[in-house]
Image 1 (cartoon, rainbow, N blue to C red):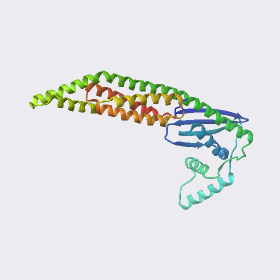
Image 2: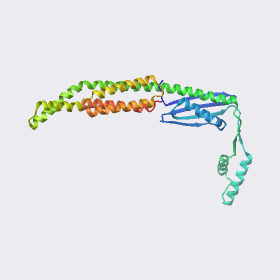
Image 3: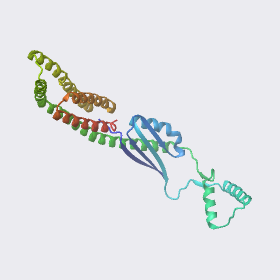
Image 4: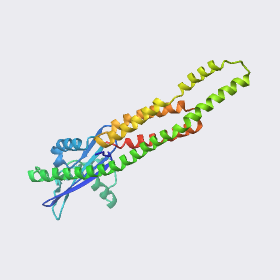
Length: 294
């Protein structure tokens, strides 16, 4: 199953007065770029969570957000009065030494906010992570991963359908070139003869024919068309039968580009060159889409 690297998954777990929420977002990236944000209480589980997420999602720019909400009147936040008083006393002494004016409501409110932001003033009740809460946490992570993987598969199906449609278009354009090849050959021969006749140089018809055959063989695109067709077939085969094919399909797209470029350099005919430009346009869109394929 082809998967996109773009996805979103969310899961929640209720445990007594707590609600654990896990959100996972991912975007495309050449490597695994994983960031995990979680409460301090769950910090010991970060390594396990990282390994689980990296194993399941494999590649991409991945952000994991884990939050905990307390229900009802439960509150694990306390104020350290001793630390508050010490900070207040020192700040007041510093202000007096600098002859700063105090006493207004605005200044007192600003001072209060400053002190509350200082270390150890606001404390969160630290507890040991119980087995029950750890189980609920990891279950929520698993559920969020299931949701993001389902999202990725859905997006991947849309992407691969679009890619295969563009491969069909390239193949159709390649087949559309064939009727112009014979006409192109006759046009080249006629142009060479006209130019020689215009110069008025005596010529050997047999030698001229040999030279024209040699010149036209250089413009033959049979091999390029065969290789281009093979690459199209291989692209479809890989897309329908393997997982984690983003890089592999990217390599096939590079080979497609080489053959299309050679077709363009050998075209020497306006309609054929126009079709080659259309092929290049489709290929660029394929390359853009492949950046999102896992």
